[in-house]
Image (cartoon, rainbow, N blue to C red; front, side, top):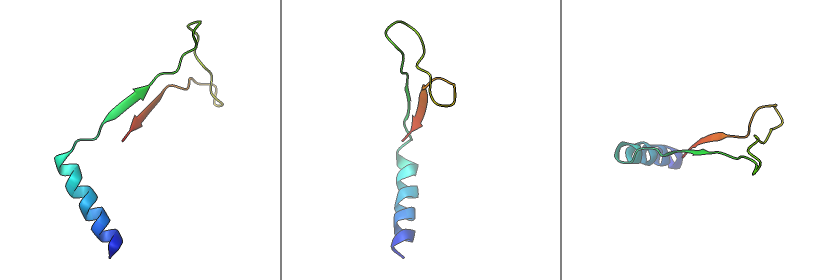
Length: 48
């Protein structure tokens, strides 16, 4: 029952407040890209 209340509250709040999308860019000072484990850059888009 507690989980259903939390889900209902979360969905209700989503109706009033839009989600913020933030993009973090991490670059080295020399202008090159920082390489992550997958070989891509570590630029990330985070939704909150």
